Amino acid sequence: MTKHAISFEFFPPKTDEGLGKLQLVQQKLLKKNPEFFSVTFGAGGSTRDRTWDTVMKVREGGTDTAPHLSCIGQDQSEVTDLIHRYRDAGITRLVALRGDMPSGMGYAQSALKYADDLVRLIRAETGDHFTIEVAAYPEMHPQARSFTDDIAHFKRKIDAGANNGITQYFYNADAYAYYMEQLDKLGVTAPVVPGIMPITNFANLVRFSDACGADIPRWVRKGAEHQPDDGSLRAFGEEVVTRLCERLLALGAPGLHFYTMNQSAASLRILDNLGL
Ligand code: FAD
Image (cartoon, rainbow, N blue to C red; front, side):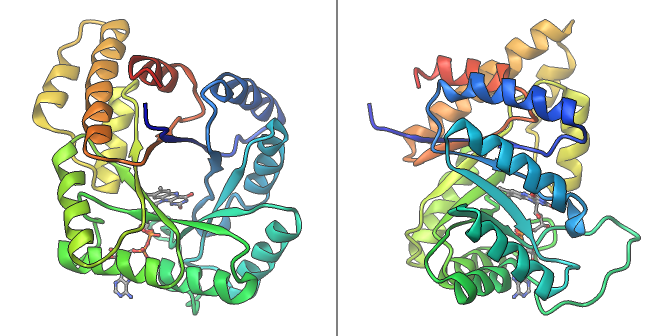
């Protein structure tokens, strides 16, 4: 079987106890031999220190660990400082994002308005040191003016020096197929790995999806709503997401990036089902 690059995303726990639990989760995920783990970064730098601490703990497991770094609302010198600190600590991969500001929170205008500005800054400051991952949106970023505009902005990030894309999660494989076809037409050949969100807590998923513009197809929504208990919801979600992953890999997806929500069970079951 072709080797697919598997990666797992964590968010930084709030406490040391949470960090200890996350290391146990990580140990379970390590048996899938991931290419890397990544750790999210809170809006406007709100988890700056906790992201750093989590990255340093997670990398003790011996696998490449990529901090997410967002630029909106942040002073360029602070962002530059953090990029240098990660390089000096031996980190070799970054997930470069614009990020979002929490609504109602004012912020200083920064020279770094979009993710491509951040990619350019990373390359200017550290050359080819980092492998740079950027976000991709097969169902279109919610603030984009049009699909065509959004895909052109993805290309802009690759042209600025990013290596790979990781998508927002989605449940419609055709959206990924179409997105990849359109990138191909623009001459963009960078690998784009689908982001996979296992379905476990459906109410949370709906809330989250409304905010980030991810579509939950009606048949998935209705199917999930009619499950009699948590166990059958998990089984339903696992089947839906396993089938999605099968289709994505058949379409040529180079790997799968799991939004783990700091849990291992659902991602592991899906990977087991896929024989990966
Ligand atoms: P950009 O690529 O800059 O795009 C943002 C919007 O602006 C898009 O609508 C785009 O079409 C448009 N645009 C881009 N360039 C231009 C331009 N030059 N002129 C006009 N319009 C433009 N958020 C976090 O806060 N922390 C995280 O750790 C985090 N991790 C993520 C990981 C992944 C894999 C993904 C897919 C998303 C993640 N996010 C995270 C969410 C992300 O920050 C938001 O989706 C944010 O709204 C956009 O970030 P971006 O990097 O895609 O922005």
